[in-house]
Amino acid sequence: MAQPPGGPVSNPYDDVELTPRGMRALAHPTRLAILSRLQKDGPSTATALAPEVGATPSVTSWHLRHLAEHGLVRDAEVESDGRQRWWEAVGRGFRFTPPADEAGRDAATLLSRVLFEQAQDLPARWVRETEPLLEDGWRRSAGLSNTTVVVTADELDTIEAAIEQVLAPYVLRSKGSAPEPGARPVRMLRYVLPEAPAS
Image 1 (cartoon, rainbow, N blue to C red):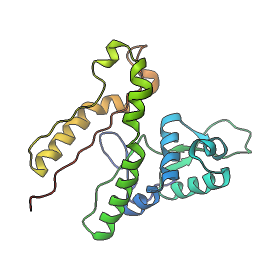
Image 2 (image 1 turned 90 degrees about the vertical axis):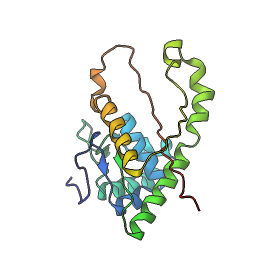
Image 3 (image 1 turned 180 degrees about the vertical axis):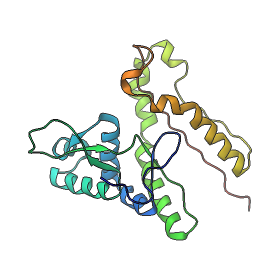
Image 4 (image 1 turned 45 degrees about the vertical axis):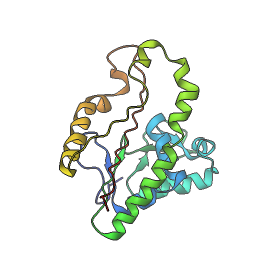
């Protein structure tokens, strides 16, 4: 499927770059859940995704078609009997930058809110369900880091770019090329929260 203007471009993770219309399309909890499942677990059908995202197969199918219109999912090339349509995520992730115009900023704010709401329970669930099961080696670098720095907007851009360059080789390697048999997925939630200007 051809990508719409504002689709994937060159960035360290080969993420899909969202247009304001794409931001609004993705700012829906069910669509975001569908895309997250496809990115994490690989190709699937509307029927298989439906119970995972809390929707009926027909509603899930409608959301998948909507995501496809914005270049976020596409038909997957998998062996099947042809009775069900298989879908896959276009990229490993997505990214967006709030545009300068008001409509674009509103779209970015809307998607940001949904993303924050989706992620807000993850740390508490990890502490409750996963952290007690970790071996000492994994516990060493796990958990929350809370650091405040005083920087300019340009310096913050430089810091973010440096972090992405460090992570990019690990993000881009395929699942089958992990260097050690004991490698496992690690979710990194990086909240970048500048303070408001002083009044």
